Image 1 (tube, one colour):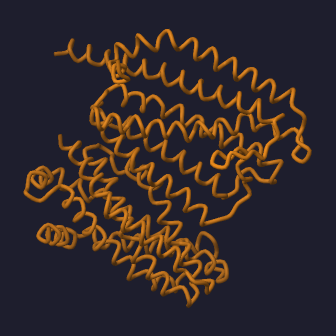
Image 2 (cartoon, each protein chain N blue to C red; image 1 turned 120 degrees about the horizontal axis):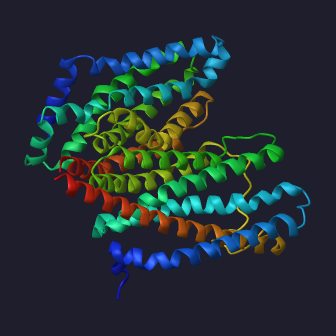
Image 3 (cartoon, rainbow over the protein chains, first blue to last red; image 1 turned 120 degrees about the vertical axis):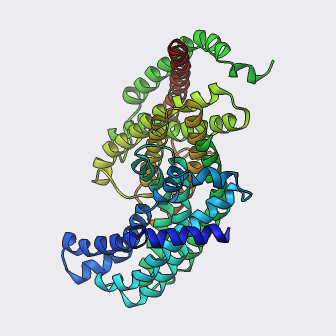
Length: 218
Length: 242
């Protein structure tokens, strides 16, 4: 499993594009928002929590169709499926690798972008915590979506349609945590819910993803 | 004699064909009686006036929109566990009916909401969770349409349906948490058995609910038959080609 994780990470870094693309997209979306809604500081700071979360979610979505599609095209995926490693483990590692290559950089970059959107000072800790807790769930849900659509032509668009409704609870709790942080309230409850969603996704979705992969490889 | 006999497509068609006109007939009778009674024979609500009458479309449609997804979930589980094709096809057949019910509930809700709340749409927990349900239906149908091989499609959509159900429930509570809204509480709480609605409105409402339920049942039977026949035609075409 470690070897697979290392391989995926190396591929993501060396192949270029995949690794930085999500971050660049995150930056672009956040920069575009003030152009769209106007540069008024009060307005920006009010919508900043939601915008940061939506942008992070879209950036995570962007790189998802690479998780299985590349391995499927060059024939690695059937090999992985027949390897001694259970397919559930493969799905889990793919989710983790996706999080390390997109979720983690997004989390680390988010405070810098918070400045651009005039986010309240009190919200930065909550922003970091909510993204750190929530983006793993985004990665795992997305891995499941990618596993569903792996053999399809134009699967990326369909995958977005399937995955976005599944993202709703994560988005709500994530943005809620930051919003409460910005208002100076205690945001422990939404953070706990986020952690629950993340743990639940990591416990259950590898099984769903691997059964989808088995069907697609049949 | 067990229920699994009906998993045989031939037996299913033979059983449901004579059943469909009866179910459909009773459904239409219920709807005509219920809607007529509801629209013309009940008094106006003392606060909401005559707009309350849209309840006879809105509530049953919303009820069936949720139950249709529930039925798809059961059918998907049966397909995954026992591999009966009719079950998978019934789930496929139910999805478009379910999405239409969801749309009816959303649209009648908007029409009702405009005079009552002064807005067509509000980001209220119930409305939002219905919109998300609509998106789930959309994804489910799109996945069915996108995959060529019927068995693969049945497997993948079943998995999606199960995962989707979990997240649908989760979204339901998440949006509750997110925003408190305008939508009134339920008028017919199943859990407590207490009714906050007077009998004058309740009797035609129940008739409408029964009508919508039977209509759903009949439509799913007909659509499942169609799916079975489409599948047969496909098999014949494949055989002719080879």
